[in-house]
Amino acid sequence: MIIYVEEKANPKQLEILKEWLNDIGVEVHSLASEKGTILGLLGETQNVDVDLVQGLDIVKKVVKVKEPYKSSNRKFHPEDTVIQIGNAKVGGGNFAAIAGPCSVESTEQICNIAKAVKAAGASMLRGGAFKPRTSPYSFQGLRSKGIELLLYAKQMTGMPIVSEIMDIGNIDVFEHVDVIQIGARNMQNFELLKEIGRTDKVILLKRGLANTLKEFLMSAEYIMASGNENVILCERGIRTFETATRNTLDVSAIPLLKQMSHLPVIVDPSHASGIAGLVRPLALAAVAAGADGIMVEVHNDPEHALCDGPQSIKPEAFKSLMEDILKVRGVLF
Image 1 (cartoon, rainbow, N blue to C red):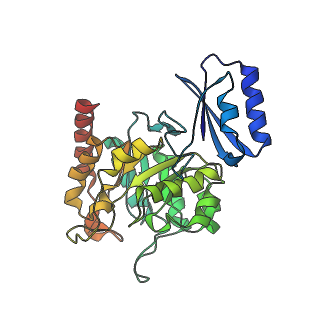
Image 2: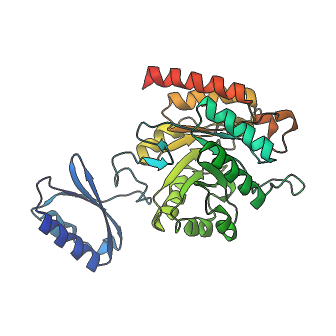
Image 3: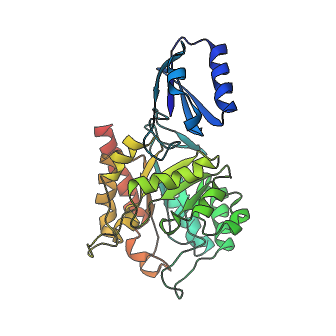
């Protein structure tokens, strides 16, 4: 439920209204916008007498929200959410590029890639330390050692780092990681989402392989309902009947999510296609569709990468991509 407050509402009356709502078991989220104050109501909203509230002098109108996702709903928060990560901003017209290897393999590898992607214009460094793999015989990542190497690269370059968590039992290892990624396989791991929602970390939530946008936002809702509103949505392709690519990039999800939610939306063209040669066109399509950022896998030696080499582009290709992104954004935005 949403209460739109009159622009010249008496502050004392507004506080009395909030206190009354709290007393009847309703959680009130207040947002000041150019059009006045908006009160987003969560919890026991069935206790609210809509006619009574609507009749108050300070209330412009009361709207019931039909969608099950509330905190992530643009109706609750009409303006874009902007998330600050180090010197980078995501959302609200701010574009962020996240780049780095699928897996951290060595000090030399991660440091060389970090320097290269930063020089090309990346604002954050990604790197997998704990790797969810389809096969139990595939490289599972360096785990805590991988996080240590990412932190070393961060110290050397000043870039915020992004890495995926698989088990809340490892949360202490992620203490100094700037952005914690929830991978596609864990999008509906609700216990993990609730626990990660109790942290103050920025959370990058990837869409599941076969999940609807509604289900995607409901997963974001789990994180936000636990108290953490710093959520970035990532479209990374969904599973369809097509076998020519690893997944199918849902470009329509970008403008739709931005209509449905106020949260920043970025795109991972590497996992969407699984083919290095398709990363550039898909990334540019995402930018043109209004994405707030991209996350690209970059490796200095893809042929010998321990994980996802076929979808990783080289640093020089990433540099060229960033130049093209600037051109597209210069024309459209």
